[in-house]
Amino acid sequence: MTSSSTRTWLRAGLIVLLTLAAYLPALRAGFVWDDDRYVLADVTMTPGGLGKIWLQVGATIQYYPMVFTTFWLEHGFWHLAPWGYHLVNVLLHAAGAILLWRVLERLSVPGAYLAAAIFALHPVHAESAAWITERKNVLCGVFYLWALLTYLRFCGVGPVEPAGPRRWGIYARALVLFVCALLSKTVACCLPAVILLLLWWKRDRLRLQDVLPLIPMFVIGLGMGLVTAWVEKHTVGAEGEVWALSFAEHCLLAGRILWFYAGKLLWPAGLTFIYPRWQIDSGLWWQYLYPGAAVVVIISLWLLRGRIGKAPLAAVLVFAGTLVPALGFFDVFFMGYSYVADHFQYLASMALIALFAALPAGGFGMLNRRVRALRSSVSRFSASPVLAHLLSAVLLGILATVTWQQARAYKDRQTLWRHTLARNPSCWLAHNNLGVLLAEQEDFEGAAEHYHRALRARPDYLRAHLNLAMLLGRQGEYREAADHCSEALEIRPDSAEAHGTLGTVYAAQGLLHKAAASYRRALQEFQGISGSSRWTALTRLDVAETHYNLGRVLTRQNKFAEAAAEFEEALGLRPGWVEASEAMDRLEWLRATRESRRTPGTPASP
Image (tube, rainbow, N blue to C red; front, side, top):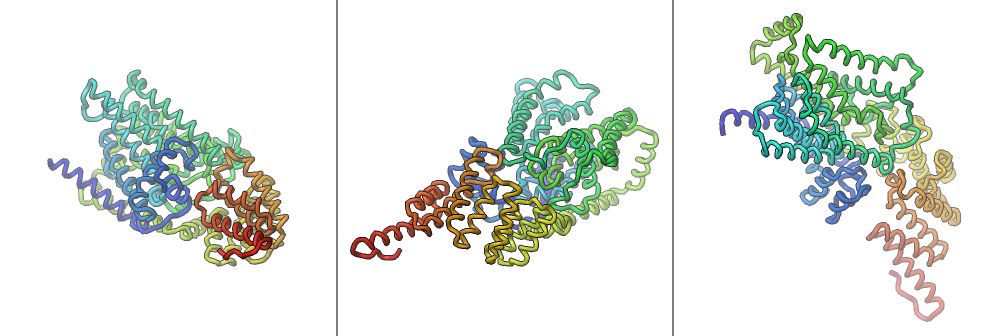
């Protein structure tokens, strides 16, 4: 091994070690929100789940088969131990940083290693690396950068590569890696456009031979984008008034999102899991400043490209272009909680980080006289390699410290929600989910307080009404529980969950006829939404539980035949369900007891 390759391996190893150190709290963390629907999903925990992951759209919450395949494989190694999944996330993030370093070196970007280290340690990426569910981001990042690096080799950017058949073999590898990135997260569809921007920057003009090989990538990316848009709307549930904005409001939102992400990269303070959701109003003049300022920046960089070079413009366009799927023009389910999230800018952040890291090192050949003078001053100030390394170490140390603190928020569910509420006190989702955790710990007073705070922040929050109704029912406050069920039904009359919860409240009071009617109405609503966008939010496990609850009510009414049919439906939807099996056994014993009253002999109690 040559001294150059040894140095490369050592520098790569340093990135890995620094990343592991910064994310040490995450390696000790557990599962948090949504991890149960990804890591603990049936398809990732059963031997036959791999086929469903790849062949059945809707079998997983999102159709990202590469991601769920990694979970499926890991389950065979560490089963339900969270540390293994966290470790893979952090290592994938470190691998992405190393690939970014190699991509920037091939593009001859000054400060490539510093940019990679900043990317690895920047706290805005803590959400992607410390949250197991965001395996989507870190896995996509690895394939995305690998595909980009391979394609740059194919098109001759950087060191000379072989021509002929071997060159097209490189192209085939880039195409396969691009597809793997898309099957990890659809935001990778922006890669062919990014490649065009990079080629435009590195060359005087785009040639036909630069565009033609990218056409398959554009077509594949568009197809996967359409699939993801359909899944977001018809499986995840990203539709309704929450996402209904006019075109003008979409533009206002896009401009504000761009500046938000750029600001968090420059000054990563106040990071939180869920940010306050802005009110977008086309009637407020000041909201036009955001998209207006973004347009001014792009136009200015275009006009100045002859003096400062095309690199700043290319970096800004790559940043903005990569963010297009997260600018609000497309319906994304998470935007029902907040229009922005740190994990949305994972890939986009690379462009601005590279630009910032390159400027002190010479900044892409900026030739303006004033820029040369400033660069000369910076060069004199940082003439000592020791001083330059010290300044870089201080910067990276600060970033790593903030990242370490941010990663602590992902210790467990309760820590995550309390950390979120400390930064965003009006987050109704956090209040509700913290209430659920407190109710499980039998802290009913604390749970009720957070449910009420969730409803003050969002009076039409159906889930908080139902959770509060269940809590009040457990405490014997049946009238108040029924009132919250009624409020939930006013919000959404066709809510199967609301009808089912009302049935449970009636059953607890012994109002068996009303309980049975509510459960049957719930089952009717479940049947009505089967196959629609709301089906996954009300999974078949909920349907099984409703059949089970109806069976118990019918058993109490001595309607044994009808009860047996309900228990069989429950077991059909949820095979091996212990409670339903035991209820069926109990029902058979009750049947036998009734028969024994007509014939001699008494059966033994089960």
